[in-house]
Image: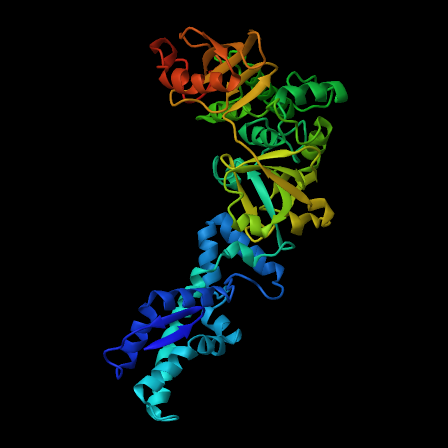
Length: 492
């Protein structure tokens, strides 16, 4: 028999005209029919994740929080489980799909009825038409999902945003209690805060070195944190605490500056276990001259003086929920806007200031959390205006290096045997891209290894790659230095 479907004239022979299911399957197996049905399915422009209407902020926060705390995939599963997507069958019927599909295959239905000699209006004719139509509808509903180009991220519109916090060291360095800054007096301020790993995590987020802060505080306040002077009325206990703090400040400054700290004098609370080593590992990369500091030294002083119970290094801003669901915040980015400082998620205190320069959010060394994660989130504690949290984000290439002095770069993390590579610019080699560099290796105490420095002529990026892959990775720990890299940290 012959019939027309779409723009094609089709001829199909049906050996058994009484088995309507078999007839429907044979009909749909024809290549011309397949093409026409496929075009028909595409004409619905089905998008399962299109949203009609608004969604409340608590729902956005819940989904975003799930994506950040667990994974985007888990958040998508939650959305599917709770019917956030559009059912293709419901969409098909709402778009009068039955009527349009009946019209598409009417030529075949009429031709088959006439060829088979069904009595008009008979139960047999009605059964045939209904059986074939149902098979075609099922095929169309399956195929409209195949034409769907939408993703779960499309559920969120341009104005759907979520407030998120980045906590430096969270996850990579421990839980919040593990990275909370401490102090030696009733309240925490610039003079009483303990300069340990947790404080250096805050400095790292702000991209400020302990050397710069100690120098600033001495110039602006007349107080040398690394060498304090005491007047009358200072108790012996408090004097001892500040002397211990000064030892830790000197240690932090020496580590950052590259000074040999194998014989450094440090307080008992820093020498315990591997605390000094962990602190030194953070100090080495807390300032990168290739990026601006997120806030000024004066702003850092304000943060420390007003976060009176300590806290964790935190950036807080408002970002696109769609971008989070697209996985754009899985490695790292640069944020412009929002607020930054120290926040206590457990007790609801701290101090956050407007970001002054772009900040690097490195998710290798911290974690993003949504407002739903902790009850004392920054919004609940401080109540920011919408403008205060306006944020723009840009993807960035994360580096394993920091330029801690002009023309001197060090690897941000150590090798397995506790060594760091350093690259120093020596001289130009006749062009901007061809320069002479010196590559050296130091241990955690800033002692140069027994490995002879090498000279590298070429590009800085190539020097970095050589230092990590061909030099640092192959450096064995000399026996003479093994005793000098005690995991408990520098000796008293």
